[in-house]
Image (cartoon, rainbow, N blue to C red; front, side):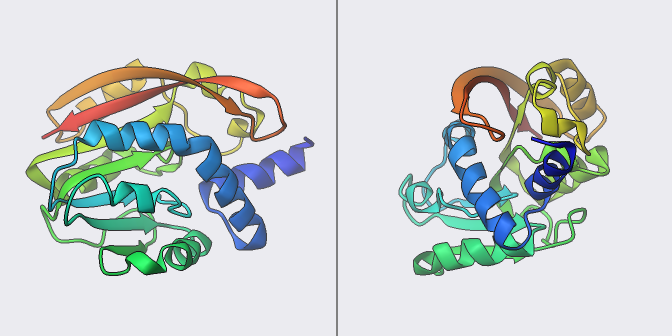
Length: 216
């Protein structure tokens, strides 16, 4: 891919827009589903919990997510108007259990201690003020809640050509240092590996990623 195409891809991975954004959203769902399912599994979801997902994309995973336990309530939040609308359209049958919120990307528009559990996959690269944003997540999470932060490790991410454009990358050590600057107190690191199709071609690549289980 040429540089201009890589820049367009990077922009749409951060904030999908228009028809191109819908296509990117479908591709992200396909390439991220392993990380997403691993993150959901790590939440240890129980009946009647209220779960927040930050950066839901097209939320193609919602149908299977809602089957995990009884009487779940799901809230998805995203900065992309395209993904906000796409997720609502794809999941209209679940409107009694799920709602989608469009926001500006810095302040979470919720009261304190609303959510039992929170998760996010492949969004941390785009946070403008990560310490402040993590403290926002801390604020809206209940005292005994769990936050799952899942991201591709720096060494792997640096092999992808599009991450040169407006991505902030983290190793496990760098992420641990970042979390230490927030109000969160406890963290468990779990490394994972999977084979996925490249976003820039048809070849298969081995992705190394981290699932952080973070507690107050």
